[in-house]
Length: 366
Image (cartoon, rainbow, N blue to C red; front, side, top):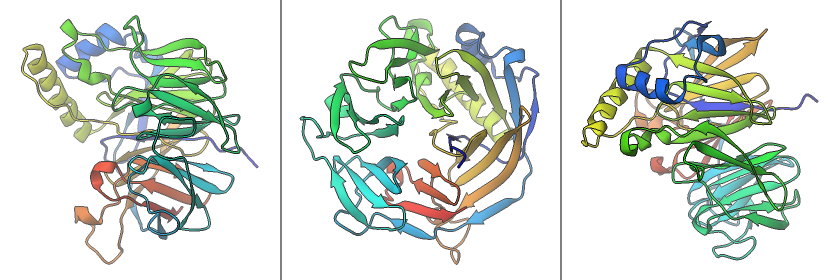
């Protein structure tokens, strides 16, 4: 069977796609930030522009909701993996990992408990599997715990991502989204085996006058076919690195709604530089799993599927996710908000963001 590897980006979008290598226009403060920090990553020769426009959306409704029955009820699911025909779900508030068979909707067992010892957790935030180890980010204990494929504790890496960041892994490295000691990078990579020696840094820390724009440094990342996909949640780019951390190319997304958000963020940046704090709007929310040579871009309850064919990224479909087929499609309460996503050959699994106060996993037929 062809190995599945995949990627999801949460992004403000509409739908449709065309690609070019021309430099896209950015509002003034965003342009300046990019020029000062990311010029090597955004050159026209290395950047593919993807414009999102008209594709007829397809409504999807869940086959089942997972996590409200069994040995435990989910309190705040935040991250998950598919492992040996089961979902392994990080439950932030219950301080454990809940296990649900992919053929069931009930929690069959839990792993770990609240504490500081090996195999114990204090508000864990992410989980990833590189084929040798399963890594669980145990944020409030300031560590990433490594487990065998049988979920036996192995060792711990004594570092965790900063707030709003998550760890990810590939065959060679475990990455945390935390500023490097030299303040030049925002992702630190450690060898993915004990004793977890520091190995590489990737993705520049977006520096600015007296660090007034530090809020732009919220980063998300995922492994896709051993390559590393990373994005600043406040900027319209996705940066692609090979499995060793060498930069390959970038994707730049545009549409009318994104342009409005970027203008708002540019105005917020100008205010911040004048010591007037303004909130930023996130263009990206998460990176999750899809299939090889495919990315899923989502915002709110919308998931756009874009596939790379013959070296070019092409729009394939737009999915709108709803809870109830009989309820209004304009009622936000009927939206299945997308926090994290896993997709295999047949199913889509969605965790809503914790802020949505909807502690379930929704399973859709693909």
